[in-house]
Every structure is written in C-alpha cells, then in structure tokens.
Length: 378
Length: 244
Image (cartoon, each protein chain N blue to C red):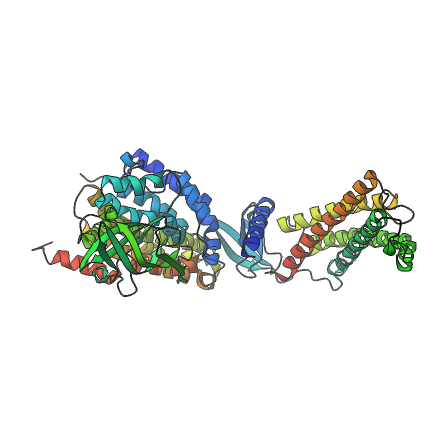
C-alpha cells in the first residue's frame, strides 16, 4: 500500500518549521548573504525550537527523528535560505558517522552535549586533492602507542571554524579510517573563511592538522572502515541535500509565481503569457518529482533498506531542478531577477553548490550506473 | 574597532526594527522602506525615485513588484526645506560649544585655589571673565536661532511632504516629524533654562552650588539630546533625498 500523506505529528513538524522559517530565516537571509556572517542567532533559535540535531538517538538525549522527518523540516528551512539551512544543519552530516558507526561511549561523549546546548560539529573529509574521490585522501593517522597522530589538510569544511569537534577521515597506512577529534586539541589550525559563490553565511574553512594526537578510543569503527562509514553517512545525508535543493526550487517557484501574477506587461498579467506560465508548470512538476525521489530515498534508509541508488537519483535530480528553477525564476523576473535587491539572483548562486557537494552530479550518476550494472532488468 | 562597529550595527538594526518594523528595499533606487508604508492594496510609491510598487511577502521574503512610475512629481523651483534645514543644524553645534566653554570656565573659576593661583589672576583670565556675560548671550542667541529656525524648517518640511510626497504616511517621514517636534520641545526647555538664568548667572558663570551644577548638567544634556535628534534628522533627510 502506498500512502503519501503525512502523519499528524509530521504535519505539525512541517508547520513548526515553516513558521520558524518565516520568522527567523527569511527575514535575515539577504543580510547574511551580504555579510557572510555565521547565523549564530538563528542557530540558537533553531536549537531552542528543538529542530537542531534531529537524528541523535533518544537514549543520548536527542529527538531520535527519522531521516524523512528531517527532510520535512529542512525543505521548509531551505525555502527561506539554503545558506542558513546549511550553516545550522551541518551538524547532521558530522553526527551521522557517530550515529551509524560509533560506539555508545563516543555517542555519549560527542552527541550528548549537543542536546544540551547549541553547539556545532564538522565533517572534515574533503581535501584539496580529494573531493568527490574520497578514497584519495592524503591525511595520515600514525599509530603511536595508544594514540594516533593525525597530519594533513582538510578543505571546504562546513562549520569548520565554529565546530567543537570534527569527524576526520585519515589513512592509517593505506586504510581510510574515521576519527572524532575535539576542536581544542593541540595542533588544529583553522583557516580563514572561504568566499564562495553562494551560501555565503555557511562557514567553509580550511582545517590543518599538525601532529594532532587522538586517543584510540576516538577511532570510529575499525581501521579501514572509514570509506564505508563515509558512504553509509552519505546514504543518510544525500536525501537531505536533495530536499535542500527542492526547497530552493520551491523558493524560486514561489517568488516567480507571485511576481508573474502581479507584474503587468503589454497590458496583461505576466502569467497570461504561455511562455511564462509553462515555465511555472514545469517548475512545480519537477519540484514534485524531486521531492518524491528525496522522500523515497529517506523512507528506504529509515526502513533499513539500501538507498544508494535512490539517494543518488534524488541528489542529482533535485540539484539540477534547483539550478534550473533558479535560472528560470530570474528569467521570469527579467531585470529584477538580476539585481541583488530582489531575492532571486541569490537563488542562482546558492543553487550551484547542490550540484557539487556531497558528491558531484557525475558521481551520483556513477553510483546509479554501478547499481544498474548489477541488475538483469529494471 | 570591528567590535564597536558590530555593536553600533546591532543597535541601529534594533532601533530601525522598532521604528520601521519589517523593511524592504526599492528595487530601483535601493531606498529602504517599511512594510507599513504600503497601503491597504499593498501599494507604495517610492518617495525617492517615484516607482509604484506592489509589495508581496513570499515566505518572509519581500517581493516588490514595480507597476508604474510617477514621472510628473511636484518639483517646486524654490524648495525651502532643504535650504532651511541647514540653519538649525549649523547653529546648534556652536551653541553647544559655547555652553561647554561657559561650563569649563566656570569650573576653573570655582575650583582653582584663589590664593596665589597664577592662571586665576592672569590678565587674560580676568579679561575672559569680563567677556563671559557676552559669551553667554551669544550662546543663548545661537540656541534661540537654532530652535527658531527649526520651526520654519519643520513647517517647510511639512509642506514638502504634502506637496512632493502626497501626504503619504511614510514611516521615515513620520520619524522626521516626531523628531522635529522633539527637537523643538527640548530646545524650548533648554532656552527657558538659559534665558531665566537658571544655568548661567548675570556674570555668565555657573553658580557654585549643587543646584547650579545640576542645572548645568541638565542644560548640557538637553543640548546633547538635540544634537542626537539633529544627527538622525540630517541622516534620514539626506537618505530620503539621495538614497543609498
């Protein structure tokens, strides 16, 4: 049986997130886009509203929400601002390796405090020479007695300069291995904030590890489990990326629809022109499709099923829909879509990253093909 | 320094939010306008560039849709308000400087030991004391002119509002009206204190008493508040004319 309706609790969650967005996110989106300032105040409110760190299990003080519930929240937040959304929800990415592969002591030590106050953590995997090609990381972890000593450079680390701890992927000999590293450990150097094309208030920095000593108890899983853990993490988080892109596309549709209904050209409403109205029809159809893909991939992982192909499909498709919707919205608004006094040009800048981070579009297609190759028929 | 500017930005933002409520920017001239400036139909005419905007709020994002532009705006050849506004703005700082000078000299005259003090008995200081009544009168005159001109500035601004801006209740103009009234009232209070000799005596000096000190502090406080009002009025007025 297929049921697309939301439960009463889920509907309440959506409404709560929607109110939160309209009150705390949208009104400051342009300001943070211009200043690039990390949205600490919004994050505090997000935490107070009980919307932050949704995946932390109940036994460690969290809400223990499903991936699908998380998607419902993040779609609403992303309609307001995906830069703020990424900044205040980056914890989900770094917490997931602990949730899927950490032991109870690690969960208690690293996740527990995050349920008590507004704190941040960061997923330190990407390197200058290893982005989508995660297995290529050069950062090393050398065993010294009961400790590991980590050396290397991590780049474009979201939340890198506000994090209290990092999930770090490093190689022990040739084996990719995950570690939890408190940010105040000696030898960690946080770089300057990167000036990116979009999502300006998302804190993206370089983090350098110089002889950083980490006790063995902070190793996640066994030596060599790192790549698997990183991939398992993406299975949980890629639906979230897909829904962020879907939210952005919704913002593009909302703005262009309102504009087209009000703006008059050649003595008639803009929406009366099929050249415009068809764009809107295409946008809503693609948004619906992107959302369904994202929800299905979340539902699969929530039910313990393999969602690698579906998560890749959702992430690839939704990010393309976001990019296309943002560009079309600017086209509908004409010159007003090109000025930074209107909220549409920001959508184009913010959308681009969805086609890149957490595995570029091409990687998603490789994942899909890899799954297809194992099938006799579809 | 960045901390100070961040704090200043925070205070300004909080004050603006209180006075204007939610704001948006005119997409044409970039003037910041209040949501409350829109009429019941959601329409607002930008006071700076004259575009007619229909304001929509999409998920908390302001979406100003331009429908028209007022090209035949009233442009009187002799607009008095921009000219007159410089009189109170230009005169008040000198009145404040005069008042501060009188207070400092009074302080020196009362606090320096009278016995063998060289400064107190110098010819120059004695000459200064002789000039104090005149300085006090000049300060009073400057303050009086500033407050007096503010009345004409306010009236000319009101006429401008009715003619050029169609009497539309823009938050920014409401703010200017309220601040002008406040400037005038506070100025009158300061004038009253000065003119009745409650601050400076016939010798131009502050009386060497607790009451004299208190009155001087109140007087200087009133002038400082006026300076604050005039700074905001000047900034807001300039913003309204030249935009961002």
